[in-house]
Length: 534
Image 1 (cartoon, rainbow, N blue to C red):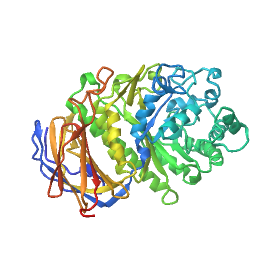
Image 2 (image 1 turned 135 degrees about the vertical axis):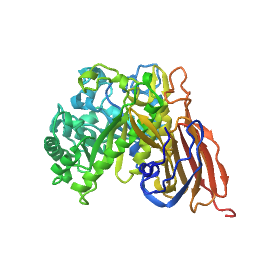
Image 3 (image 1 turned 60 degrees about the vertical axis):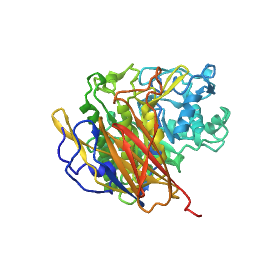
Image 4 (image 1 turned 30 degrees about the vertical axis):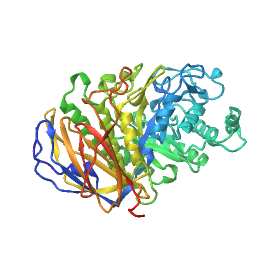
């Protein structure tokens, strides 16, 4: 159902500092091409630098995430390095994967790190929170070596559910210790003479299941006191919750102890309608629901400003996010209903475009958001890779990360555009989506400009005219990711059903013109050329 354009959502569509004008929509209601949209990019309007960490991933000791997505063992016929499968490492290298969170998630709250060190043949088998037998083959040293092989920052999720401060500071000494004391020596004995230099350590996960904000604040005071002493330069992360006034109450309770923490973490999962029942409106609803996650970040930022002010910079981390299909958890009564499940779901083009919208939202919050971890990245829940024996499949979401990685470390630029929106009916409510969702960035040396454009409409092509103010001579290339339908997937039979393809870009009077197919992500890269005659 098409109705007149409303201006409310448009600033979120192209950036918080854009100049937006609302207009009556003259877009057709059926398949075809919408009106041409002119987007003016101002390279001088820098809106924050995109932290690579927002493109991070989570690998929990759950299901087939680690076994066999990351670890296959030294004796496996699958090519590996000390048990870690090489195809997964190479795939993440291609993404320039910046950070990994481990061993959970919820699995961390029953994980005892000493079970996962030393000779693997001597490590005990244990029962995980998820009632899975954990062989402990992939422990601290393996995780940190795996991160090093990829070139990623490790984020260690500590155990405050069934652990204590002594266990955590011993872990910190094992990982980072330089002295000749017990746990640093144990690391050396286990074949790792140099400290790993892990920076990020967390206090708690999904803490509202156990504590109120005020009671959790007491845990932060207890654990943080010792963790800070043993990790003077550590980035200590406390756990927030994406509902009600949790973050506000927590920060109020900790506003006098800012030395204990550096970041606050949040989570945001979205649940798409079951594939078997899905209609077009369900796809649009998922993409529109991305606003919920953006609001979670914005509300946390307001709480930080309210209780911390300018006394210290407290960053925000989205430690888990993704599309969590209702098919794998229809009851929604965490955690009992999920015991014994494998959490395997298909990764669809719909999930991928949702991920693209999420990452766009992260980039617009570049001055507040430091880290974000897609969960669970390999095989389980929302993933970028699927493995089956020696086979590896890159999902549509993998390709979204691969395209949008070009914004890493770049400065988000200001935009001016007139962008309409279309409306749809969702269970009796009229909701809306922007016709286009656009982010533009440039490298600090102005050698490269990147513009990414999401067209969320299932049947309408969009024509876009880009104008880069003050730019010199440019070499242009464009890539598009799309599919024949929102529920299309890459699988082991057809692993490349959905993959990026080159797109045409026309030039006219120093403007660049391209057509964005229905339900697509298009990336345009501009490389600066030397002036003529130089």
